[in-house]
Length: 339
Image 1 (cartoon, one colour):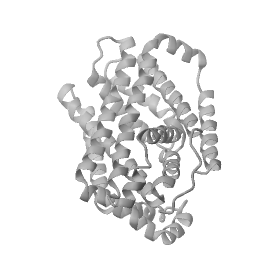
Image 2 (cartoon, rainbow, N blue to C red):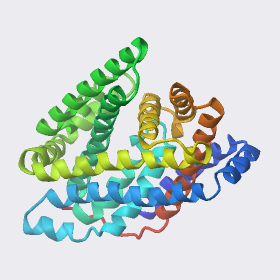
Image 3 (spheres, one colour):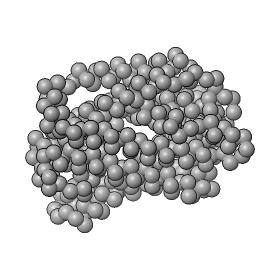
Protein backbone atom coordinates (compact mmCIF):
# COMPACT_ATOMS: atom_id res chain seq x y z
CA UNK A 1 0.00 0.00 0.00
CA UNK A 2 1.23 3.51 -0.79
CA UNK A 3 2.49 5.41 2.22
CA UNK A 4 0.01 8.26 1.74
CA UNK A 5 -2.92 5.82 2.00
CA UNK A 6 -1.44 4.21 5.10
CA UNK A 7 -1.10 7.65 6.66
CA UNK A 8 -4.68 8.53 5.70
CA UNK A 9 -6.07 5.37 7.36
CA UNK A 10 -3.87 5.94 10.42
CA UNK A 11 -4.77 9.62 10.86
CA UNK A 12 -8.49 9.00 10.34
CA UNK A 13 -8.55 6.19 12.90
CA UNK A 14 -6.45 8.21 15.33
CA UNK A 15 -8.80 11.19 15.05
CA UNK A 16 -11.85 9.04 15.82
CA UNK A 17 -10.00 7.33 18.69
CA UNK A 18 -9.14 10.70 20.25
CA UNK A 19 -12.78 11.77 19.95
CA UNK A 20 -13.89 8.56 21.67
CA UNK A 21 -11.36 9.05 24.47
CA UNK A 22 -12.73 12.54 25.17
CA UNK A 23 -16.13 10.97 25.88
CA UNK A 24 -14.76 8.97 28.84
CA UNK A 25 -15.05 9.90 32.50
CA UNK A 26 -11.42 9.33 33.50
CA UNK A 27 -12.18 9.05 37.22
CA UNK A 28 -14.70 6.30 36.43
CA UNK A 29 -12.14 4.66 34.15
CA UNK A 30 -9.47 4.67 36.85
CA UNK A 31 -11.88 3.29 39.47
CA UNK A 32 -12.97 0.58 37.03
CA UNK A 33 -9.40 -0.46 36.26
CA UNK A 34 -8.52 -0.60 39.96
CA UNK A 35 -11.58 -2.75 40.61
CA UNK A 36 -10.89 -5.08 37.68
CA UNK A 37 -7.23 -5.52 38.61
CA UNK A 38 -5.38 -8.26 36.74
CA UNK A 39 -8.61 -9.44 35.06
CA UNK A 40 -8.35 -6.46 32.71
CA UNK A 41 -4.98 -7.74 31.48
CA UNK A 42 -6.53 -11.20 31.10
CA UNK A 43 -9.17 -9.64 28.85
CA UNK A 44 -6.51 -7.92 26.73
CA UNK A 45 -4.54 -11.17 26.44
CA UNK A 46 -7.68 -13.09 25.47
CA UNK A 47 -8.08 -10.92 22.37
CA UNK A 48 -4.47 -11.59 21.45
CA UNK A 49 -5.64 -15.19 20.98
CA UNK A 50 -9.07 -14.41 19.49
CA UNK A 51 -7.47 -12.47 16.65
CA UNK A 52 -5.58 -15.67 15.79
CA UNK A 53 -8.96 -17.31 15.07
CA UNK A 54 -9.95 -14.39 12.83
CA UNK A 55 -6.63 -14.46 10.99
CA UNK A 56 -6.75 -18.24 10.50
CA UNK A 57 -10.22 -18.00 8.95
CA UNK A 58 -9.10 -15.33 6.47
CA UNK A 59 -5.82 -17.17 5.82
CA UNK A 60 -7.46 -20.42 4.71
CA UNK A 61 -9.83 -18.45 2.46
CA UNK A 62 -6.84 -16.83 0.74
CA UNK A 63 -5.01 -20.14 0.36
CA UNK A 64 -8.04 -21.84 -1.20
CA UNK A 65 -8.73 -19.25 -3.89
CA UNK A 66 -6.36 -20.04 -6.76
CA UNK A 67 -4.83 -23.56 -6.96
CA UNK A 68 -2.82 -22.75 -10.12
CA UNK A 69 1.01 -22.56 -9.83
CA UNK A 70 0.88 -18.78 -10.30
CA UNK A 71 -1.84 -18.45 -7.66
CA UNK A 72 0.05 -20.62 -5.18
CA UNK A 73 3.22 -18.58 -5.78
CA UNK A 74 1.30 -15.43 -4.93
CA UNK A 75 -0.30 -17.04 -1.89
CA UNK A 76 3.12 -17.97 -0.46
CA UNK A 77 3.86 -14.24 -0.24
CA UNK A 78 1.13 -13.93 2.40
CA UNK A 79 2.65 -14.85 5.77
CA UNK A 80 0.35 -15.70 8.65
CA UNK A 81 1.73 -13.18 11.15
CA UNK A 82 1.78 -10.38 8.59
CA UNK A 83 -1.89 -11.19 7.95
CA UNK A 84 -2.46 -11.15 11.73
CA UNK A 85 -1.16 -7.56 11.81
CA UNK A 86 -3.49 -6.56 8.96
CA UNK A 87 -6.41 -8.33 10.68
CA UNK A 88 -5.91 -6.42 13.93
CA UNK A 89 -5.53 -3.10 12.10
CA UNK A 90 -8.61 -3.83 9.98
CA UNK A 91 -10.74 -4.47 13.06
CA UNK A 92 -9.36 -1.30 14.66
CA UNK A 93 -10.60 0.71 11.67
CA UNK A 94 -13.94 -1.12 11.75
CA UNK A 95 -14.39 -0.20 15.42
CA UNK A 96 -13.66 3.45 14.68
CA UNK A 97 -15.69 3.82 11.49
CA UNK A 98 -19.42 4.56 11.22
CA UNK A 99 -20.81 1.70 9.16
CA UNK A 100 -18.08 -0.65 10.35
CA UNK A 101 -17.01 -2.36 7.11
CA UNK A 102 -16.47 1.02 5.43
CA UNK A 103 -13.09 1.40 7.15
CA UNK A 104 -11.37 -1.90 7.74
CA UNK A 105 -12.24 -3.70 4.50
CA UNK A 106 -10.78 -1.13 2.04
CA UNK A 107 -7.62 -1.09 4.17
CA UNK A 108 -7.33 -4.89 4.03
CA UNK A 109 -7.80 -4.94 0.26
CA UNK A 110 -5.16 -2.24 -0.30
CA UNK A 111 -2.65 -4.04 1.95
CA UNK A 112 -3.23 -7.46 0.38
CA UNK A 113 -3.44 -6.38 -3.29
CA UNK A 114 0.34 -5.99 -3.82
CA UNK A 115 0.82 -9.64 -2.84
CA UNK A 116 -2.01 -11.48 -4.63
CA UNK A 117 -3.58 -8.93 -6.97
CA UNK A 118 -6.57 -6.64 -6.57
CA UNK A 119 -9.29 -9.10 -7.66
CA UNK A 120 -8.15 -11.93 -5.36
CA UNK A 121 -7.60 -9.49 -2.51
CA UNK A 122 -11.10 -8.04 -2.98
CA UNK A 123 -12.82 -11.43 -3.17
CA UNK A 124 -10.94 -12.78 -0.13
CA UNK A 125 -11.86 -9.72 1.94
CA UNK A 126 -15.51 -9.91 0.85
CA UNK A 127 -15.55 -13.64 1.60
CA UNK A 128 -14.03 -13.09 5.02
CA UNK A 129 -16.47 -10.28 5.85
CA UNK A 130 -19.35 -12.55 4.77
CA UNK A 131 -17.99 -15.39 6.91
CA UNK A 132 -17.55 -13.07 9.90
CA UNK A 133 -21.17 -11.86 9.70
CA UNK A 134 -22.42 -15.37 8.88
CA UNK A 135 -20.84 -16.70 12.08
CA UNK A 136 -22.60 -14.00 14.09
CA UNK A 137 -25.95 -15.22 12.78
CA UNK A 138 -25.16 -18.80 13.83
CA UNK A 139 -23.93 -17.57 17.23
CA UNK A 140 -27.13 -15.62 17.89
CA UNK A 141 -29.26 -18.59 16.80
CA UNK A 142 -27.26 -21.03 18.94
CA UNK A 143 -27.58 -18.70 21.94
CA UNK A 144 -31.37 -18.59 21.50
CA UNK A 145 -31.58 -22.39 21.50
CA UNK A 146 -29.36 -22.66 24.60
CA UNK A 147 -31.40 -19.97 26.39
CA UNK A 148 -34.62 -21.94 25.84
CA UNK A 149 -32.93 -25.10 27.17
CA UNK A 150 -31.25 -23.52 30.20
CA UNK A 151 -33.36 -20.54 31.32
CA UNK A 152 -37.04 -19.97 32.08
CA UNK A 153 -38.83 -18.26 29.17
CA UNK A 154 -41.84 -16.00 29.72
CA UNK A 155 -44.21 -14.77 27.01
CA UNK A 156 -42.33 -11.59 26.09
CA UNK A 157 -38.98 -13.38 26.07
CA UNK A 158 -40.50 -16.09 23.88
CA UNK A 159 -41.58 -13.46 21.34
CA UNK A 160 -38.11 -11.85 21.41
CA UNK A 161 -36.40 -15.21 20.90
CA UNK A 162 -38.76 -16.14 18.06
CA UNK A 163 -38.09 -12.83 16.29
CA UNK A 164 -34.35 -13.28 16.75
CA UNK A 165 -34.45 -16.83 15.40
CA UNK A 166 -36.48 -15.63 12.40
CA UNK A 167 -33.96 -12.86 11.73
CA UNK A 168 -31.06 -15.32 11.97
CA UNK A 169 -32.77 -17.83 9.67
CA UNK A 170 -33.44 -15.11 7.08
CA UNK A 171 -29.85 -13.89 7.31
CA UNK A 172 -28.43 -17.42 6.97
CA UNK A 173 -30.57 -18.02 3.88
CA UNK A 174 -29.38 -14.73 2.34
CA UNK A 175 -25.73 -15.59 2.93
CA UNK A 176 -26.07 -19.14 1.61
CA UNK A 177 -27.55 -17.62 -1.54
CA UNK A 178 -24.68 -15.15 -1.70
CA UNK A 179 -22.10 -17.90 -1.29
CA UNK A 180 -23.64 -19.97 -4.09
CA UNK A 181 -24.08 -17.16 -6.62
CA UNK A 182 -21.62 -14.51 -5.47
CA UNK A 183 -22.45 -11.25 -3.74
CA UNK A 184 -20.36 -8.47 -5.32
CA UNK A 185 -22.71 -7.77 -8.25
CA UNK A 186 -25.81 -8.11 -6.08
CA UNK A 187 -24.53 -5.62 -3.50
CA UNK A 188 -23.41 -3.12 -6.14
CA UNK A 189 -26.74 -3.44 -7.96
CA UNK A 190 -28.54 -2.75 -4.68
CA UNK A 191 -26.36 0.31 -4.07
CA UNK A 192 -27.14 1.58 -7.57
CA UNK A 193 -30.79 1.96 -6.50
CA UNK A 194 -30.09 3.96 -3.33
CA UNK A 195 -30.59 7.73 -3.72
CA UNK A 196 -27.46 8.82 -1.85
CA UNK A 197 -24.93 6.60 -3.65
CA UNK A 198 -26.42 5.61 -7.03
CA UNK A 199 -24.57 8.41 -8.89
CA UNK A 200 -21.33 6.74 -7.84
CA UNK A 201 -22.49 3.10 -7.91
CA UNK A 202 -23.99 3.00 -11.45
CA UNK A 203 -20.83 4.08 -13.32
CA UNK A 204 -18.73 1.89 -11.02
CA UNK A 205 -20.78 -1.22 -11.90
CA UNK A 206 -20.68 -0.39 -15.62
CA UNK A 207 -16.92 0.18 -15.58
CA UNK A 208 -16.00 -2.82 -13.41
CA UNK A 209 -18.46 -5.49 -14.55
CA UNK A 210 -15.72 -7.94 -15.54
CA UNK A 211 -13.89 -7.56 -12.21
CA UNK A 212 -17.15 -7.95 -10.25
CA UNK A 213 -17.98 -11.12 -12.23
CA UNK A 214 -14.53 -12.52 -11.41
CA UNK A 215 -14.97 -11.76 -7.71
CA UNK A 216 -18.39 -13.45 -7.71
CA UNK A 217 -16.97 -16.56 -9.39
CA UNK A 218 -14.27 -16.74 -6.72
CA UNK A 219 -16.85 -16.32 -3.95
CA UNK A 220 -19.03 -19.09 -5.40
CA UNK A 221 -16.00 -21.36 -5.84
CA UNK A 222 -15.26 -21.38 -2.11
CA UNK A 223 -18.71 -22.71 -1.32
CA UNK A 224 -19.21 -24.97 -4.36
CA UNK A 225 -15.71 -26.38 -4.91
CA UNK A 226 -14.11 -26.10 -1.48
CA UNK A 227 -16.79 -27.07 1.06
CA UNK A 228 -14.15 -28.13 3.60
CA UNK A 229 -12.53 -24.70 3.44
CA UNK A 230 -15.93 -23.02 3.72
CA UNK A 231 -16.90 -25.07 6.79
CA UNK A 232 -13.47 -24.58 8.41
CA UNK A 233 -13.62 -20.80 7.97
CA UNK A 234 -17.13 -20.58 9.42
CA UNK A 235 -16.29 -22.87 12.37
CA UNK A 236 -13.18 -20.85 13.21
CA UNK A 237 -15.23 -17.67 13.30
CA UNK A 238 -18.01 -19.34 15.32
CA UNK A 239 -15.45 -20.67 17.83
CA UNK A 240 -14.09 -17.14 18.10
CA UNK A 241 -17.59 -15.83 18.90
CA UNK A 242 -18.12 -18.51 21.57
CA UNK A 243 -14.66 -18.06 23.12
CA UNK A 244 -15.10 -14.28 23.23
CA UNK A 245 -17.77 -14.95 25.88
CA UNK A 246 -14.81 -15.54 28.20
CA UNK A 247 -14.28 -11.79 28.21
CA UNK A 248 -17.68 -11.30 29.85
CA UNK A 249 -16.94 -14.15 32.26
CA UNK A 250 -13.57 -12.70 33.31
CA UNK A 251 -15.08 -9.29 34.09
CA UNK A 252 -18.12 -10.65 35.93
CA UNK A 253 -15.93 -12.91 38.07
CA UNK A 254 -14.66 -9.71 39.72
CA UNK A 255 -18.22 -8.99 40.86
CA UNK A 256 -20.02 -12.36 41.02
CA UNK A 257 -17.90 -15.48 41.64
CA UNK A 258 -21.00 -17.60 40.95
CA UNK A 259 -21.37 -16.45 37.33
CA UNK A 260 -21.25 -19.18 34.67
CA UNK A 261 -20.09 -19.35 31.07
CA UNK A 262 -23.56 -19.69 29.55
CA UNK A 263 -24.79 -16.48 31.21
CA UNK A 264 -21.74 -14.75 29.75
CA UNK A 265 -22.60 -16.17 26.33
CA UNK A 266 -26.21 -14.93 26.56
CA UNK A 267 -25.04 -11.44 27.56
CA UNK A 268 -22.60 -11.30 24.64
CA UNK A 269 -25.17 -12.59 22.15
CA UNK A 270 -27.84 -10.04 23.07
CA UNK A 271 -25.38 -7.17 23.37
CA UNK A 272 -23.67 -7.88 20.03
CA UNK A 273 -27.04 -8.24 18.29
CA UNK A 274 -28.30 -4.98 19.77
CA UNK A 275 -25.05 -3.14 18.97
CA UNK A 276 -24.94 -4.43 15.39
CA UNK A 277 -28.42 -3.06 14.80
CA UNK A 278 -26.79 0.33 15.50
CA UNK A 279 -23.95 -0.36 13.05
CA UNK A 280 -23.88 3.27 11.86
CA UNK A 281 -22.39 4.53 15.14
CA UNK A 282 -18.58 4.71 15.51
CA UNK A 283 -17.38 2.20 18.11
CA UNK A 284 -21.12 1.37 18.47
CA UNK A 285 -21.12 4.15 21.03
CA UNK A 286 -24.11 3.87 23.37
CA UNK A 287 -25.54 0.77 21.68
CA UNK A 288 -23.09 -1.62 23.29
CA UNK A 289 -23.51 -0.03 26.72
CA UNK A 290 -27.30 -0.19 26.41
CA UNK A 291 -27.10 -3.81 25.33
CA UNK A 292 -24.97 -4.76 28.32
CA UNK A 293 -27.31 -2.96 30.69
CA UNK A 294 -30.46 -4.63 29.33
CA UNK A 295 -28.97 -8.12 29.05
CA UNK A 296 -27.40 -8.16 32.52
CA UNK A 297 -30.52 -6.88 34.30
CA UNK A 298 -32.64 -9.49 32.47
CA UNK A 299 -30.36 -12.18 33.94
CA UNK A 300 -30.73 -10.77 37.46
CA UNK A 301 -27.43 -8.90 37.53
CA UNK A 302 -27.44 -5.43 39.09
CA UNK A 303 -27.44 -2.43 36.74
CA UNK A 304 -24.24 -1.09 38.33
CA UNK A 305 -22.49 -4.35 37.47
CA UNK A 306 -23.73 -4.11 33.89
CA UNK A 307 -22.30 -0.59 33.65
CA UNK A 308 -18.96 -1.81 35.03
CA UNK A 309 -18.91 -4.64 32.47
CA UNK A 310 -19.62 -2.20 29.62
CA UNK A 311 -16.82 0.10 30.82
CA UNK A 312 -14.16 -2.63 30.90
CA UNK A 313 -15.18 -3.94 27.46
CA UNK A 314 -15.11 -0.40 26.07
CA UNK A 315 -11.60 0.11 27.47
CA UNK A 316 -10.47 -3.16 25.87
CA UNK A 317 -11.87 -2.02 22.52
CA UNK A 318 -10.13 1.34 22.78
CA UNK A 319 -6.83 -0.32 23.77
CA UNK A 320 -6.90 -2.76 20.86
CA UNK A 321 -8.02 0.01 18.49
CA UNK A 322 -4.92 1.96 19.51
CA UNK A 323 -2.72 -1.12 19.01
CA UNK A 324 -4.27 -1.76 15.58
CA UNK A 325 -3.68 1.83 14.47
CA UNK A 326 -0.03 1.64 15.54
CA UNK A 327 0.36 -1.59 13.55
CA UNK A 328 -0.73 0.27 10.40
CA UNK A 329 2.50 2.28 10.63
CA UNK A 330 4.56 -0.93 10.59
CA UNK A 331 3.59 -1.66 6.98
CA UNK A 332 6.16 -1.49 4.17
CA UNK A 333 5.80 0.15 0.82
CA UNK A 334 5.50 -2.33 -2.07
CA UNK A 335 4.43 -1.89 -5.66
CA UNK A 336 0.95 -3.08 -6.55
CA UNK A 337 0.79 -6.31 -8.54
CA UNK A 338 -1.22 -6.35 -11.74
CA UNK A 339 -2.08 -10.01 -11.28
